[in-house]
Length: 413
Image (cartoon, rainbow, N blue to C red; front, side):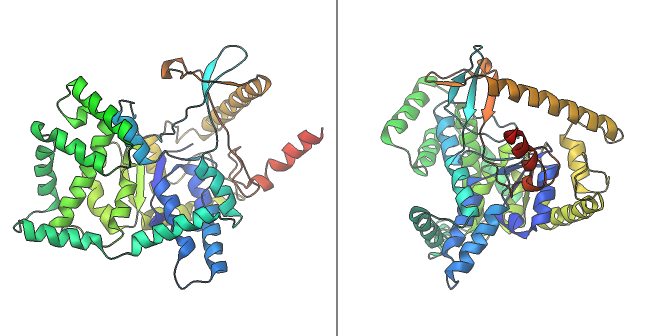
């Protein structure tokens, strides 16, 4: 498992299937809900035959592989949880919220992560099957991204109400960092953030009750992840008003990808607004790679894999490649001791198989009470693997060409 990477749609679409396979061989892919929305949005592309549209969405869906990937929880859900006081850990790893507490026969406590609604939908999309509700969702998404440009309206209103000030993005960020932490404005910022979310009145009351009772001076301390998202939103709108970013109608959609920045090591995009904004929100322990550079790097790695008879090497081998450098930066490995890495991976694989065997032999019972993070002794993730998915054994081959036949033989026995 390599470093965690997020792709926007521009990068995702640019990659061939061979490059997608190589991506999953060397990275852990954090799939954002916004990418799934954009893929589904293609289902109602104008002036395109229905059969061709379904084929496009089907192919895009197949490029989202199960191996070494997960769909992270929607940012709105994370913001609400953050405002309610549930800690959202921003440690460059994806966040998957699960309420399925469980206990084993031997008393071990843990959680079971079942397939999400998005993962279940993806299985259907890969077969070209779409519900009427999904078609309606696609239509609404298409209207949202093609309706008269509201961002241009915001930009024009900003110019009328505020005299033109000469700012660059760096100056604006410096000024905004001061303003957004101004103590007497914090309640207003909280109200503004809540107005952007679809929250029921009862939850809103809980948030404000917590705000009043905790006597915390800044939103940054009260709800770090919610503050991160608010900071991004305000910076984008200010940049838009000052014409430092363009008013393209889909720019506010593209902005949503950046709400997931805290959950990856590397972010890749070919989008102009991302390239402008991301330097101001990327941590010192994070990296950005353009869609063009990532594609070129994966293409070269894919060629090297083909020379290796289609199988992946356990670590990237070319010191000049971006992937090699990212592994050096984010993964504990031994570039000069490949045999040791292979041995360690094989030993780890055996250890995991033993744990899985023990879990399979025990009865997993779901319980109603929530288990504290400190008490969690196991996490079980349930996923459905199709023959077209990459094999979970890590060979880099498709499941149908690798372990599927072995599993069938075991079942026959």
